[in-house]
Image (cartoon, rainbow, N blue to C red; front, side):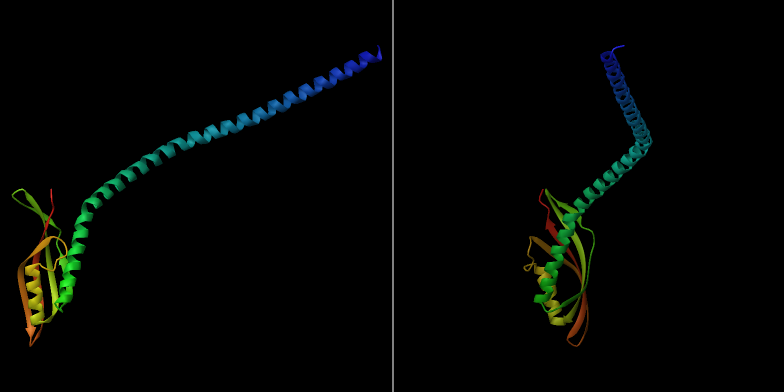
Length: 181
């Protein structure tokens, strides 16, 4: 055999060995990737039912939260009105030199008069002060001139306890606010 054929044979064996090495390397890399993908698929199959249940739970929580938000939104304007009423009552009390010691309110209701709907809130106000100042406070509530927003008050009961010039009073009143429809 000639030395040229030996060189070509060695070169062919080397090329064949390189091709075999590349093929084995590619095969083992792809086998590793396939195993990793199989593991990922198994993990995903295990997680899908859990995640689906969790998604349903979260959707239920979202629906409950949305319902709570909607119900809170319907109550919010009434709360704002009661805060405004309370601010006015405290301002009137300050102007009349009496101290409000307790203020309670019932939930507002609607009262329809003809085509007009009013929001009616019942309040009980306990005050301390001079009897003349308490009477001024009752008169200011009855007249309603000191209210900041368009509503009026109806004094439904007044109970005054007094000793000399100082006294305490419990005043029941209803505040009417135009709802505008």
